Length: 286
Image 1 (cartoon, rainbow, N blue to C red):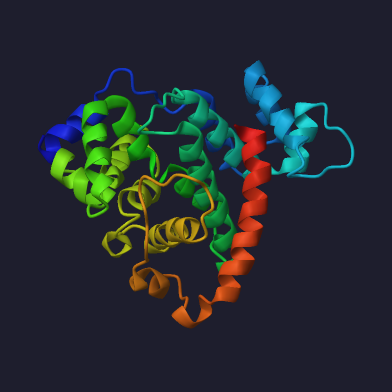
Image 2: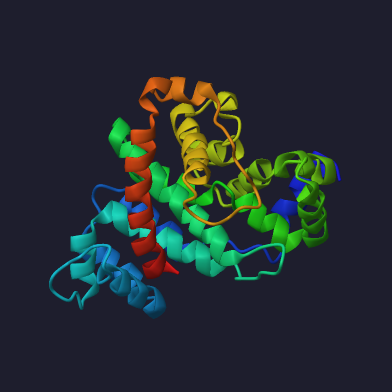
């Protein structure tokens, strides 16, 4: 299956879910500085299931509000627009893809890793002073979406890839190239193009294993590359089909981090907070 043929197949899968309309609309509204709480409340409240989930998350231990939040407009005010955007995109994506799983793929583990990467990206972005931490969260959440697409829509090929890794000598990406002539980064990037996501998000998904290839926003791509490694290094999130054993030093250069800063103390501190945040977020969203 040649690369261009696969790209066409991915972008033309009839059953492939579109990015939910309400998530797109809310994200667009949040990016508009003129948007009011009342306008967001009006849009979100049209979906009763989504409204209930937002209220559930607002009342979860993660946010720790002392009084019960019973109205959507109050939930939006206390959560803040950026957190609301992250929550809605997370809920919409997890709901859009069927929770299909088998012995080759555990849906819960997949989304746990995705959320861990999103949380780690947001945390590190804030520490580094990255301008839009919400964008970092979404890029982290979506970085491995190509694996999910492969499992659900190219299932026989996916089984071959996972099966070939049993000897411990082949990597996931190596076998993707052998079987599909493309990696999950490329497949995820094609899906992101179909969803009309911003170019920097498409690039971060497509090149999260090769940050040096990014052109639009190397900082975002390098960030996702590094936090993907961190999640595997720290054993945060249980998705083990694709192991990431190291990081490209170029990513640290792009992020203006030195290897001397990546100490055991850094791993311990970052890992502790990430595990705590993931546990509270995962319980609320899934």
